[in-house]
Image (cartoon, rainbow, N blue to C red; front, side, top):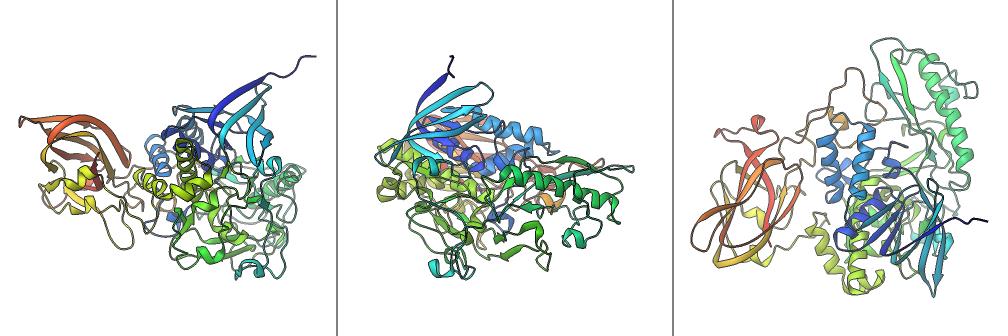
Length: 608
């Protein structure tokens, strides 16, 4: 009898799960030199943010001003804004795909579901997945494993400690804790997209759909999506009272009946302004909020995320999304003043820190995780679970894994001896850790900084964004140089610039209600829809000039097509001085100042 072929991979890091957390774990580790295999059970990447589920990416920046996630998260958002102005889901999928598939050091295994693991002496030796498209097994041997699967598939396969459900108030002293712990979770949702046409569109529901003749039969759930573009039918949610892993197929069937019934109600059961609206897409893969959560060396709690949280010495990421706790009853609960009828909310006025100790297993020595399965209580998870926050945790996880591999350490070993290097590397890669500043290179610190216009001293203050009331940037004029001059000629390997990408999305054409998110919510592209613009303040063209040892001026780098916030490029020159000359932005014509020159806004100019 012919057996299935088994392909064997030997690598540094194996990432299971290709959602936003898994993607950024893999990309960041690979960019720091680790060989990575990413195993994803779906044909597309992005998890809940993919075209299969179509949930928008939320994070701290969606709730607290100046806190938009940067690093690889912003890199992907800018790529999408530049190349996908009409917010087409297929193009979005392709951007996520190329970020992983064409990243050196990553082997991507799509349609490959992890279903087995081999352990030895409290560590993982290998994991095995089945690839549906090729009918092959893939066995991956690695030094470190990162479970970013959401459902924490490696927990039952390896014996890693995990939790399910809601804690009692007595366990962590959380205000929102229960009198008695239970196993209930947040449910899962099927999302709907529709588009407005210029004519009446009929809709006939399938015979098996539920029928909701009145709002009362629909538990008085809000359905104002046609007039409010920044909401959707998130309340088509079930599963929290059962098992959001083993019951998924049955839950999906119920959600489909509800979703088609809700659209039938919108179109045919009352006046909802839906006559010209056409159902364009309805998900068949439930978007999952909660299942297993790993237990790490630290468990983040409600007390850690409220009132600015705690000042963790091992902070590597941050959150700021509200405590957004969906109660287990979901759709079956009656609506109330909280809009959906099954939410427990508390807005956070300040960001909170997430310690590295929440990102690796307490009892499996080479297991890490980044996603909705980090080490957190149910209430803290209600904030950390959103994908913007998951993304920055993923970048921290992957960077830590690369450092562990570099030094032959366990994930815990990075905490014990390399946490400062991890934090420094994340800041260098344009991640934000509130309360931490980036250290400029010695080359930058020792040079004399001058500029032909304005005050450019903020370029060396180590904070690469507007935050906490401070701009931290340099407003220069295009064509006017910022120069570092050295006491004597030095070798310059390259430069690093952080440009203003309009983190608050104030200078972008398009619907302002949708500017914080990379893809649309309920509404799909309407017949009269306009595309979105690109941040007008973003640096587009600039050049780097040097003064050579013999006093000659020379241009060593020039571009007219930059669209990224983090700009790093090699030079490999010996120079007496290095000058950065901004030439234009993406909105130069609309940003002309009173002096007749376009304004350029950058946060740092560093040499290495």
